[in-house]
Image (cartoon, rainbow, N blue to C red):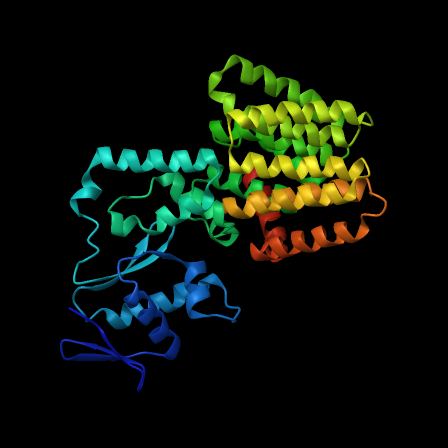
Length: 384
């Protein structure tokens, strides 16, 4: 079976049956047909079918809904939902999810291990590229990574709309986005409440407790509290080898906290050298980019503006390569918060540039318009 497209009246036909479509329905179906069997996220479809326009992701869902109704009479033509990601067009059963590889438990576990590796190395773009090919390669995306790939893309709207998540897990992801974009004091208060009330799933509770909260103490003007909390983090890392991966980000958070209070640049350089040794053992993109940003901030504070800006820009570039939209947003958050509390003479132009980048990255996720709603959702989740 094949679909024949005619721009005269925006019609699609097959096996003697013709269906008239609206212009954007036609463009969407034509694009999916040219890429039959390949899954696309809503964001990708917006970029390809609505270029230089500014619709919302709901626009894609509405057009898919109407297309499905119009295509219903055509046997074998189906726009399937790829759980946790987006949509894929299958024609003549070519995208049957019951293909043998999809039923191979060993293969499914091997694919999950690949995602785990990419996750560990901070290769967000690699994770997204593999997720988009799940129909062609014949595997089902692991439930955790179906959500995590949304996080990597900064898809806040999907999380706010529910995403099929249980309330504690949804609370965690929304808390992270509020942490990246809200006021540090408010974010810290939400984190402390979530930890005190045990509202988060166990593994995510530990991550907030041992890592995420550290920078919030520093950015809230309480770097001593961050260092005190860090002692607890290090004790957990020493007791449990399962927390070994926390060692480098915890050290970067220590360096960031000390920038708010240290005047001895030699001590800070010694801490940097320790982090560089850790990164030599675990060269993960997220940690490399984050370290370079905080290292650049140290140089700015020490008066070496040129080297500081170069180091910060290098770090932001690494986070771009990683493809983790929220992690880059958090890197910019670190820059903006430190420079607001501890202005660097002569670096005003650079700080304004980073503030613009922070605003642009926040807008990319839709956070300015969604932040108040995230706050309401957090309140409801913490009171429920």
